[in-house]
Length: 443
Image 1 (cartoon, rainbow, N blue to C red):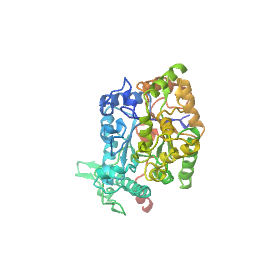
Image 2: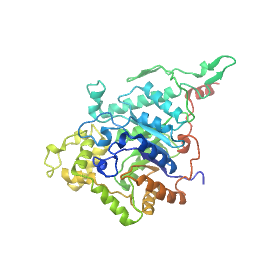
Image 3: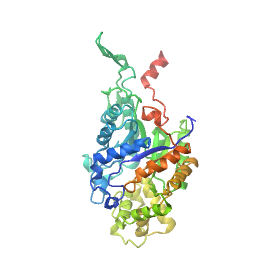
Image 4: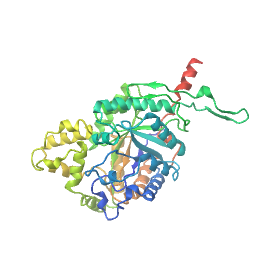
């Protein structure tokens, strides 16, 4: 039974909420996105529910159209380091962009989080798709979509090379003979590439899990190739189960063709369950959420998918404008999905915006109905697990208290943390140090 495949669960820390209107709920703290006490409570609740990890998304530029959570929020590594001190088992996954960071700093930051948490860190590797970000980092222009993934591949492999600077037993600590570190087991990277030149070694040793777990959110064709090659877990946002199955099968096959084994990588769609103890209660909660939304929310999602393009300049009830070229240079997967839906339904800007503002999905219902839906996605080729949002205050507690026990009773979810590191709890192998492998081969 220990080898039986089980659902993986993450919880995304989203403060005031993921939409433009969630913050208006009477029970929301308008400063929730910078409220450590709230995040601590959510982290402890998720750990009580045996969730595998907490997830912190990020963005590096804002404007007047940005959603409230992104307007005023914590930097990911900072909040995760604080939460590492008040949790014991749950993984800690933070988003950090390769487009506007240096590999040495990234390697050092995540290695530090990994040590602070005793082997619970994960890095969500992103390329930053909002073009305005360039202006915050002394850049004249944002890299093109295809180049961003070339940068990402070199950045990630450089960081992973730095994480191998210290072999696992490099720190000797021999006080009698005055030997702190074995110099033969401390390695310079000496990386020289088109984007980065990094000498090394990293000034912190390997953690109990060897290296942080690599997450990615590849959805475009280029992004899927990147995820299939590099990611250990993939966060995605399919619109429905059919789309999830297509994505799941495609990404697994890409990974298989690259020689990856053991069903890698883990694929984790986002889900926002709305739970009521009765069907009527669940529907009332959904309507409670829907009542908060507005056309502005839908236009916000639409604008963000097309690189903050202003859709109010058009007739909202007229034909949808030709904006595919804008989407292709921004959040490609989201923009192409929207364009497909617009063409299928011949939708106006107003119609697609309202659809985006009030998605219902499969996860509205009683605890049993929500558990059934999660199980269906998991067992029919749609997911290896889920990253959960909290659409309304109190929903995480309902999930932990009522849905988790059902999944556990069905043998679909663990009853306790089995291991001490994040990597082990996800069922991922320990990454053998490249230099130790080389020495073993030559020895």
